[in-house]
Length: 430
Image 1: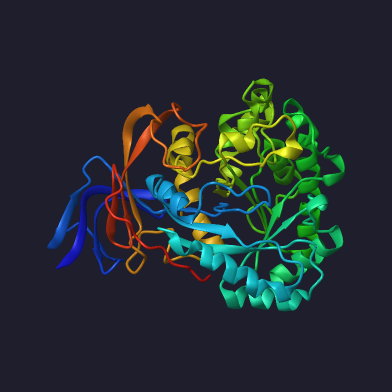
Image 2: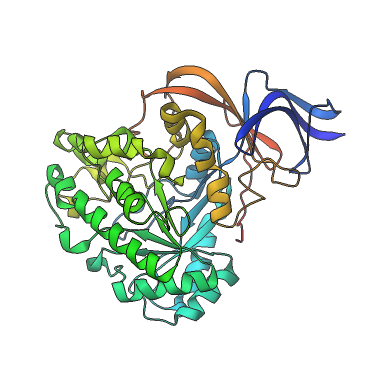
């Protein structure tokens, strides 16, 4: 007898929907079948679609920025994630300047994440790194943190990676099969600490576009593995498609975030413009529409979830406020409302395979973790709830299509339009 059976739904398998029943035992998917089997608990999913639990590969819970710390810790952030169907996240270690600092950074973040209600992993993050690269890559793999993030900006906070080092990282990435995540902005084109209404102009679109073109050339030459985080400009993607087609989605991959599809830089003329501040900033309507037009060329969706309270954000200049907004709870439903079924892979199998989580995560297969979303595609309404600890949510009252009705984590029903159980997350080596 199975623990749980999800019956009469349409199951997402290999990019299509099949009428199957899903049977769960001991926290794992045991069987997918057209037959009806005996089970202790049966969930009728008539009219619903059954999806793998979502993966957010880009979050910042409890991020310490010195003066400020992001308000959602691993407990509150993971509960908010569960309401959005997200059952696995990848957060970031604090920046390191040497391979000798990696173990300490890992242990510190692992301790902070013990209250997570969903599974988690980490990306290694580099500051102004001057250690041994081979040791760095070997240690990253040994710790189960098989990805490394760099910044091409932020010299003032000692996080910028030079072109010389970036090129070497790409060479090592293919040797060790460890992808390099890149916050791509051309620092020489950025102006720091400007009035909020100038935020997008001070970090202009060409800053991202030109940096991504340079990175693409590096990848073309090295055959390395690059993953561009929070891509904001459709032009960035079009330039890579047109000039570097051979590496697009083979060596170079694009992530973007829901807020770049829903807002544009006109919000920076509002009185509450400070609430919309993140880096890179929101872009022009033209670039937002280009981004939408290139959804098929975007590999995955992250949220860059980094939420703060209004009082921390209410500043007149960009240098005095913490950058970032929340959104993990609404990510899937926002993107589904715009693009429908075509975005499912971007939340599931794509990040799972790329970041070494597959087949435990990202698919509904016998032996996979029983992390499952039961989704109603026929619902029409608005976002009316928010479970972040932040005292504002930019997406409240946004019109949506579809609704996450139930979430199963490790074979336990944890969301049934409300939080039923408080599961325990675990670190996932990859």
